[in-house]
Image (cartoon, rainbow, N blue to C red; front, side, top):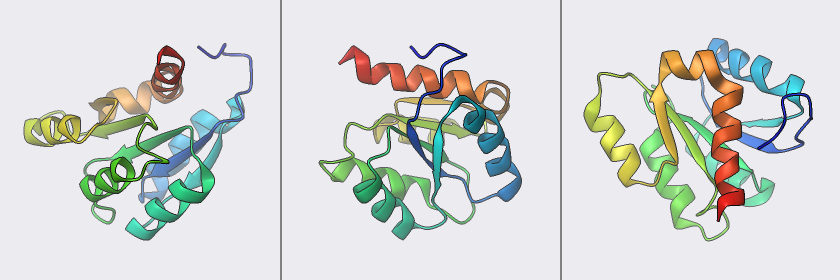
Amino acid sequence: MTQPDQPTGHTILVGVTDIFFYTKVRDALRPRGFRLERARSQQDIAGISSTGSPAAVILNMNDDVLNAFQALETLKADARTKKVPVLAFANHEEVDTWNRAKSLGVTKIVSRNEFSARTRELVEEVLSTLNAE
């Protein structure tokens, strides 16, 4: 696992269209050396993931603009991104969303509140799954 004082250099594909929430993600990850690629559309997911080789993906399962389920299907269908860990967050009351996300291959799904409070730690946790394989 990455130590808190060591920059990572990992590129994270962030599927979050809400600018205020994206800013929270950026502020949590950039100081630790993470590079961010923001996906605002389905085309961005396919394009960035196939050319940018992200180390991990963050998805807002409740995004009104970006269909996170379709994004997951795109990522898991491509051999280049099939094993990239995915950290997702969703409303904690939407059990169907959580179950569907897990069935589509999300590495970890948490509530919006937990994601906001522990963004960096959660990203580092899903990245550690790469080393466990």
